[in-house]
Length: 199
Image 1 (tube, one colour):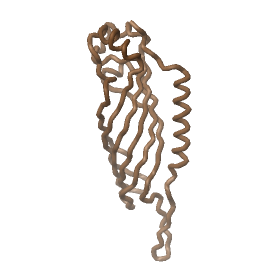
Image 2 (cartoon, one colour):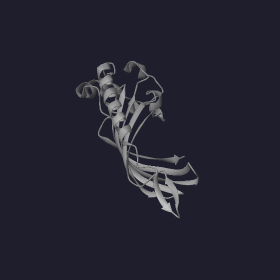
Image 3 (cartoon, helix red, strand yellow):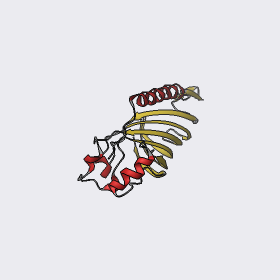
Image 4 (cartoon, helix red, strand yellow):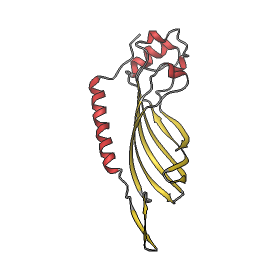
């Protein structure tokens, strides 16, 4: 039985360098027009956010829940988002956004023999290190009871792709027959939805 294929160090370095460049560019472009002054009665009112397009980059981690959490470590996740503010009031704001996201989950096991007899069912097996690429569309809003404190929600949906890193012929002719089932994670795109509370 072949061992899980782990991407080479050079591939990891290339991905990190490319994503670091994206983060730098996004950071430079994410500054929104701010401190625009509205004149009213001779007094200047400083508005910290104006309606308009924005570019944002995020870096963090994604933690799996469910059966596959026993096989994959928390990921390194990088996002780049473009969006638009459609509501800008003193007490409320709202907007939409489109996000391109990438996650890298490292395997907790060293070979497929480690999966035999484990508590994880074969339909939840993974190839080893697993990449996830996604395109998400969402929106949200916030209410500001006091200055600089917003309470709101964020929700949306999108698609994700988990590419097969192992040679497909070896996967189909050796790995899947050994497991007796194709987990299906690496076949086509997956639909996803998300939602949560924002502060």
